[in-house]
Length: 228
View 1 (tube, one colour):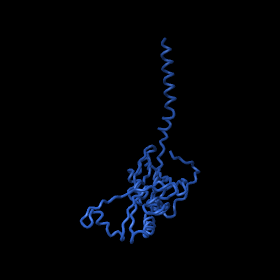
View 2: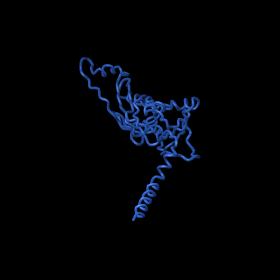
View 3: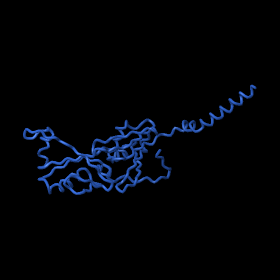
View 4: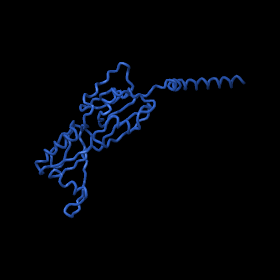
């Protein structure tokens, strides 16, 4: 799976591997809005304000294929490519038309990556609860690199904002090369594939097993007929 030719040209990893998570189409964001720079957040969190119970509701919104999202009181807003903090500032400016010193909180709630830790066929779907989960953290959440995994050949497959897939080859086997990309922030729907060490003996046995079975059956049938 995800094998590449010897001369395959990998894409160049980002110059700034520590860049923050950026919102992409099909993300689901949890949106919260407060007035007066969030003065009432503590009261809302406790469920009371002035002795009256307040229901604290978080509503989720889908980022459409073009990167837009429809939010209350606003026309369609485009958040594609923005970081979470950039999106919050952008929406605070939009809501300033309706509220005094609005305070916006956003969290992406459906971020997932698929990690192949190095056994070849095993894979794990990891849900990212933090906005800026790093490559090393994602691998650790999948149980780490297995004994068969090659730390020097980790393929990260990522869809860019234009919808095209880029394939990066990352080496985490050394301090010099690994530390630079260990803190790379993973994006939703990344594929992290740790290339496994080939098991040539097992592969050869798997390939010739059907022929051995046919040959054994033929010999058995020949032996039976020889007895008559």
